[in-house]
Length: 337
Ligand SMILES: CC(C)(COP(=O)(O)OP(=O)(O)OC[C@H]1O[C@@H](n2cnc3c(N)ncnc32)[C@H](O)[C@@H]1OP(=O)(O)O)[C@@H](O)C(=O)NCCC(=O)NCCS
Image 1 (spheres, protein in one colour):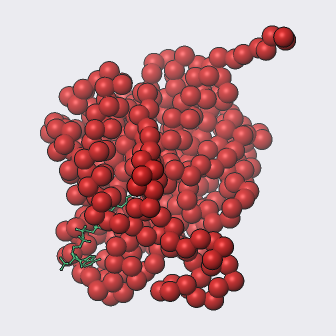
Image 2 (cartoon, protein in one colour):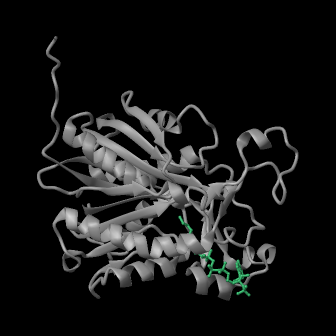
């Protein structure tokens, strides 16, 4: 049997830079309420959302990803040629193949970086960070770029009362690279396929191709969601996952500076913070109020805003926790770059 060489990577991995792209269209609640017989007051009270951002036709998945990635790369202090792998987490790149990651890697100017998309819905970014950290530590990539990007407005039924006011567009990116000290804790991730149907694409592509109208919408398949069970699951089960991520990182809630949960609903964020008994000093991401729920982009966008506004500082300890369709989830403790 031939001896196969193996490689090892950096002793530790960390997030070295974060970038964001927020689409140009700001859509206040007043613009979505008529179609769903709702009100600004109801939406703010039930979800905490004041407005969301939707992309223009020109703000494509690729354009938003490249915008966020360029900022993350610059902040990481590296050049695109140093990126060995590009991971794009998205559920709204609406071509089945090829992966949009390859076009993004090319436009950024990487040197033939490995590039692929992953589908873990709102949990996609934290899945990507975990994969990237493992790559850097194992030696399969020197630096890896993780992008969370969505154009959920493309697959949102504007007449659906349960989703039309929630979903939004945007991109966030992180460069993961070598570090002298651990900057990304062990991931706690998993799935609950028994609840596979709670958030889903309503129509199969095969059923809509060539169909002139799908009820309520035109020809696009849409997202549907059973809001109540998702709300209960996220508020309680995910607080436990957050605690497990702290345990695995060997820290307690008192050691946390920043909490960045998936921006699904302000009430879920508050319920998780209460369940986890987060102390007063822990600063909590509340990007959803201005941005809406951007699925895979929500965590890097929220962290980026906290960094911009001085609420998260370099060296702070942050808990990231992402969850959504699948149901899939992933959480890890990270050091803010
Ligand atoms: C979607 C969500 C905000 C709905 O809130 P809710 O409190 O569960 O609302 P319900 O569906 O129980 O409906 C409560 C009432 O509001 C009404 N309602 C529902 N949608 C409404 C809307 N868009 N506008 C106004 N009223 C609405 C219902 O008709 C119902 O009225 P009734 O009490 O007179 O029967 C909430 O379930 C939620 O946030 N779920 C999780 C969403 C999420 O996190 N998704 C992403 C996961 S990645």
